[in-house]
Image (spheres, rainbow, N blue to C red):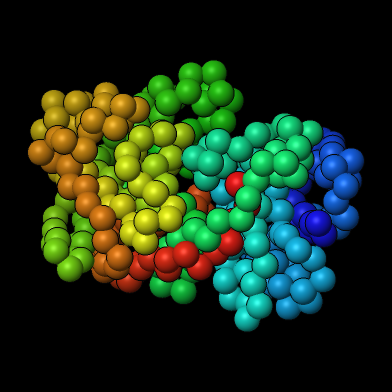
Length: 291
């Protein structure tokens, strides 16, 4: 197979020679490999679109964090002739790769891609004119995920998010304002966390959207509303288990589209963007992904 790697060399664990190891591992498995290191914002999207237009490779391998994967996805989706994508973990945030349970060792990944991975048509989301492969989030979770130290996460796991969350409450308060409107749901008021997810793994938590699936034709919506502290504590303690969705101050549902108005900055696959008013929709089965 002709594989083109689009690699963010500055992403977390992909420092050093991991990019080179991935190239050699894929060649060892019999693939023809080309390589492009990104240099700036949306560079991965431009390169992905270029490769789709050229149609000289069989697969684009997005090597980096969730942000790199998002850019490559956007480049593919804005192309008339699309190519399949294969995600490889390597950034400080690898939620989508964690959801797919992909190997993050270059040699293991090359073997997996060659011998086990198959193409699947998966859903993606779209907020405004930006596609997302995993999640759109705003409120406390978005801020905490961005500010939590990566070394602290590797040592303490999800507990690191609780520490950073407490710091956020002390420094800037707890609530933002939001209005959410879908076919069967409406809410206007204060909130703590809002997210629209394609998978169940978000911000290091593996059950934040417990039954989310990337091929069911729906997006999963989670809204944690303003609540007494004891309820918020109960929600926080149940995030890892997925039991938080039964709390009376949590709304959790599926939808194909919705409209959101908020004064909070949005996080789109790990990248901060600002949409004061946005329409969010699922694009069902439109991206071919190897896993």
